[in-house]
Length: 187
Ligand code: ITT
Image 1 (cartoon, protein in one colour):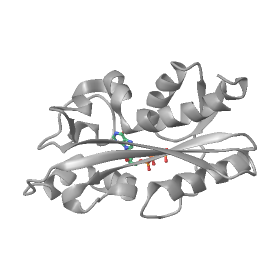
Image 2 (image 1 turned 120 degrees about the horizontal axis):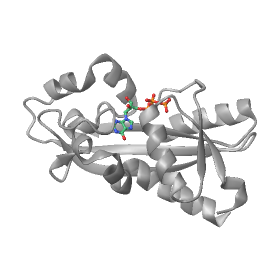
Image 3 (image 1 turned 60 degrees about the horizontal axis):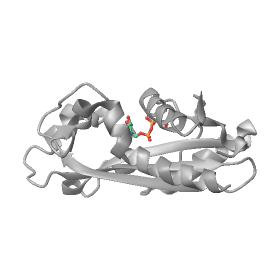
């Protein structure tokens, strides 16, 4: 790995995201340093511009290269809801009420998406995305992971049941990070 990327500041207030990213990056010899700073988030229908905007704001403010992770769950029967509004829905409704919205839906298809944005001060941000497909379970199962993991069924078990170690091998976040790492290795 290029020495410029041996340490990277990851701006997030979400402990679950941080521990997943820290573990994945460590396996590539990169140390993630958490910055809990609260930077402005724009509203948009896609995650890419949201992540890019926050990364640029944080990099310009801190004066060091940073990465951010903007993620969401997109439920097909609900036309992609909550998508970029996932945080708001998790805070206001939580998993039990998302399950209620899905009570009479036979189409359970959903995907998680992560966009990692990386930005150096006074430069333009780069984005790397990853998705993983699964189904919305009928009840919460498992206490691993965080957020929507207990209701996201991946081949018969939820991410909550499968736990962080397995999740980190197939997740939306892992797939986005793989692209970011590939880019870093070329620098
Ligand atoms: P930061 O912006 O500080 O990084 P956040 O929690 O606000 O943290 P997001 O807006 O990206 O981050 O998160 C959207 C929501 O989706 C939030 O409620 C997360 O807990 C949830 N979420 C994100 N990634 C997830 C994952 O891998 N598994 C389950 N839920 C996830």
